[in-house]
Length: 76
Image (cartoon, rainbow, N blue to C red; front, side, top):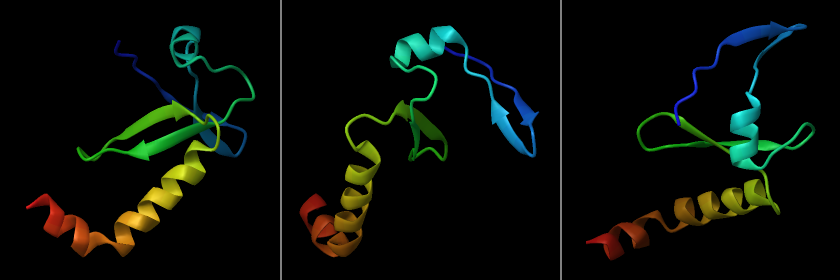
């Protein structure tokens, strides 16, 4: 599914309107939190924030930063 979104002015900020098809696919509704995760291709992935996902990602990023050299060696 490819959905084109347009950035619009909302008060003093900018935002996008998500169509109900996209919200249904993500099982998200008004008032839910969404998380943008950076992808290796330079883009972003949008997912609903379920059960502390953003906190788990912060912990994973911290671990990968601290043990960068060990992970690099293991990848060989």
